[in-house]
Image (cartoon, rainbow, N blue to C red; front, side, top):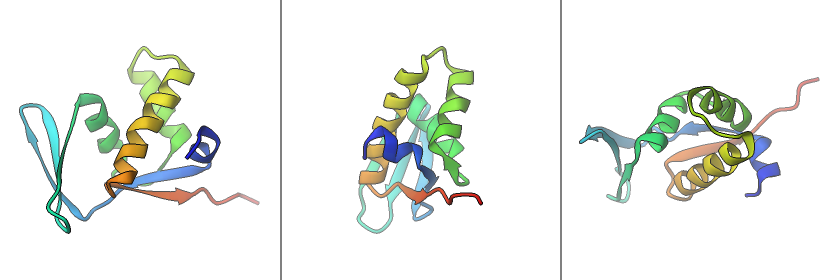
Length: 100
């Protein structure tokens, strides 16, 4: 996905995983395939915000309020993390419905 595609989507964590905190990092276990993933503190923060569906833009705005990061840098960093999470079936992506 490119940036334009990301800004038209919302994301939510996939609930088909088990997780726990080990040494301050979130470890996710994909129950279906047995793969596990370790997320650093920033990715863990993003994951925690995706408990409910959240648009890409809203997620980036929240992160910019928490971290000292420029908007473009935030967009690309979050896009990279979400791409990896989505590729590994850890988050679901949804088209944002247009309002009338």
